[in-house]
Length: 366
Ligand code: TXA
Ligand code: MG
Image 1: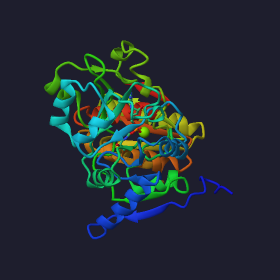
Image 2 (image 1 turned 180 degrees about the horizontal axis):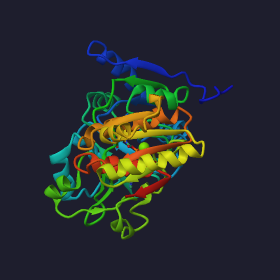
Image 3 (image 1 turned 120 degrees about the horizontal axis):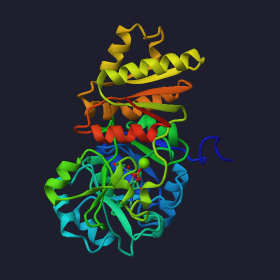
Image 4 (image 1 turned 90 degrees about the horizontal axis):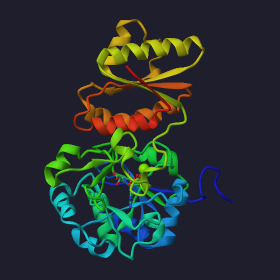
């Protein structure tokens, strides 16, 4: 018999501390070596890892996440030496980016070697590789002795997890273990850059921004869904990994983009219209929009309706809180979530706005 919400697996939860680090990592590495699935924190979001070179282990990731076959997984490595086994024809630009940003929130798409199975790379001739800046996955890869296939540890189509609780909400009963290492520091997934293209293409914005990349390797192109005009120029093969839906809560998200108080005003106006129609509305707001709506007397008695991401000029904090906010609001049974797109696009702002756009079913520009 399968458990109702799972694959009938008992998911073990390990709280990782300095005292038990060695023992827990050894046990987790053993699970990986046996072909199991283990979720763990990274500096970006929680990942779900399995032996990336073992098709039957990788298949368990697809099953647990209900991830569409063909959506490529990326590999986490522990040291540069791990690269030899999994990629070939690594261009000079890749080494420059590794020097500048590894370990860190940057996934490099490179030509794969034959040892990477087709199920891992989604049948593509390339594979994404990242050296995370977090001792838990680094040590897990090191002890397992294998690169880990490690997508974000959420059910496919759900917001990425920024805590062990988010992982359990989606995957309890579907995976072998979760290593609870506390909250993540960045909160949105890594920047993905395809180096098999010339000039290289940014497939997903993240903590490593465009200017930082261009400073190291010169011109790069933007190839993600919301990157405006640039996206149209990228061939469908290059965007192969990007064609799957992401970050969509069950509740419809309406995003208002634009500058400052015009956004707050539009949110207030839309809230009025929706509420008049009898719809229950949740709000994902900057602090400024919350104050604006408060000052207009638009705050309802029920403060449960509001999730504050942070100040408009603090996009890094907002990015860290985004997935938590989407998950919390999504559980409250609203008919619609009104989301604030007035954050500055500096730092993690571009990644934040990209995730908001992907979560949105309707977008307004003011
Ligand atoms: O920060 C992160 O990257 C997190 C942590 C856990 O490491 N991982 C993560 O994995 O976000 P995932 O699978 O959820 O997202 C990886 C992205 C996907 O959009 C995938 O389609 C793309 O990278 N990708 C992977 N390999 C690719 C390839 N060979 N070509 C194009 N896109 C690729
Ligand atoms: Mg993901």
